[in-house]
Length: 627
Ligand code: ADP
Ligand code: MG
Image (spheres, protein in one colour):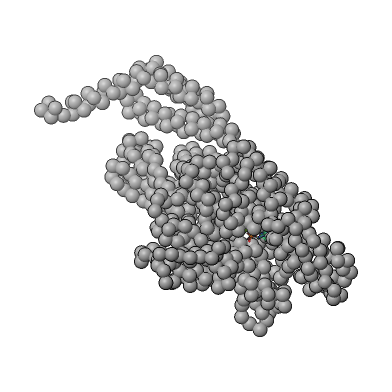
């Protein structure tokens, strides 16, 4: 046994465990796909590799079969046995994760198994003999992959990164996380599939750039535009077609076979056989120009036919072209043009089809990145991220997530002061100082809000708490530091501290909970639509708050030191105060500000006289030897 050489057969992955220092944590990346799922880990040299099953295959069909006589089968075994029990075999369970029955029924995709509404309208799967939730089915797939990894890595897993489509909302992500937990996995992080693919290519090393991730899998097409800034990926736009993928290529080819065969009565067996053959031929034609088909006909004699790549391309051309519109739309949504992209990444088994590659090249005008196996890249990137999160990898901690909406607090006039801007990479912490508004104010209400709008009423309220025990000082003298902290999972903690006394209060809030992507999108869109009007309202409210403060201060000064003014001066100051009050009742913020400036100017001499008096008061109140 040689310790120096690690020999692997071509096409077969290295086992990443061979030499494992004791302090290295066993972590994996899992691509939980619609049609295939994979698990990968990083080896001691820092290279990620997919972990194969006993038969040397890395891709596990995302299929689970519950035979009527009990037990559960996953992957290849489920596919084979499933042919006998189609209503007990669950494929494409990912399409039902975190979805209600209404969501799934509304989608174009037809499942082969029964569905019903469970708790809160969420989908439950009905087989011929039992009911099961999509989370449980996914957990079965995850458990199978985890078992494979534990065997390869030689022990229990410390944790896993699981990938999800970029467009997955809160409920779908939560369901995926639950599936991980149900499978006994510690879910270190959910990472977007396009981000994982970009990581696999090391695009994060470039620090800056715009990238397109073109993912054509078995049943879905996804296009994502990512922006990388200072090593952080931000999803700028997503699009695609949830009912377009390699399965449709198979379908076109098998229809072609049936026609060529002149089959009149198409039995389910013949159909199955045609589909299986079609997939093989399709995959062969990615490498070969011509392929010989040979199939058993129901009547007995064999059906043989030579199929050229050109013939196959003619059958699927319109399907490939249908991926163009979502690509153009995503570029438009991201506000960029194709030539601004620094790279295009190919993901998904169907991007092996040469015609698809050529199409991607044409539409984006550059040679796509394809050195890595397109059906493995997502798992490989997830493994790299898991390694980082476990602290095994050297180098900077990768920041992959951003806050979807701005976080801030309410200030006077029902305005929002943003503390953490939307799209800030997390974890992050930011502080801002605030002051008291009234003389002797000893408490301050802190209202935490989320959203892009200028007014509190248009944002989402997250939490309220009160900071008490502020020393009674004149308005504007106390200094209250409010700190917002968002951890890596998006959880927000807000604390407030009065700086001179150190009085502290804090509260933990969960900003993203229950706020689905749809709501986030709505809030963002509203902010864009209302931007101008919001800004005007904000200026108006600010002007009013300031007017109120100045009027309050002037009134207090008159009460205290009014005797410093003669009747004429008093009348003039009261006149400008009234003018400011009247202006503040109207909607014109500029007029309010003008009136306030007038009051400021008209009271300068009064302020000076008050200053003289207070200085004299201080001096006369003390003995000379105190100075
Ligand atoms: P998903 O992400 O949807 O789970 P994959 O990315 O693994 O799935 O893609 C699966 C699809 O890729 C299947 O339709 C499969 O037939 C197709 N595929 C795999 N290898 C090839 C190949 N060599 N040529 C063409 N299509 C392929
Ligand atoms: Mg995939």
